[in-house]
Length: 100
Picture (cartoon, rainbow, N blue to C red):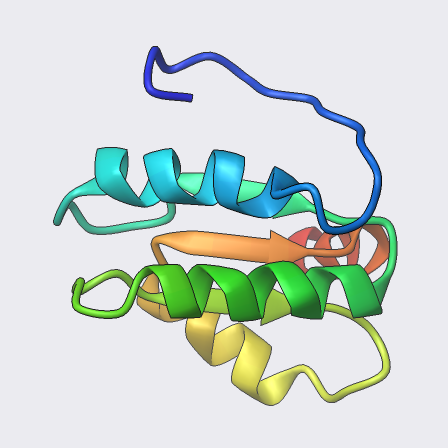
């Protein structure tokens, strides 16, 4: 992540996968504006967990985050995307809905 390369990882629950990519990502993002990190998760539950982790790890920064998944209305999600959240955590289906 720190070298600017894409990352794919798999390991058991509780091994620190999210922290392993979230902390260097937050460090690298700095204070520029606009979406610069997109994280795709297969389910809304996993997306919500990763989103919560990023918010926790990013406390004390000016970074903004958006959670984009189905099962809820589009209003707040549209607003977060229009404002240019630094980090977007999304499920593929809802992200495609927003792109069309």
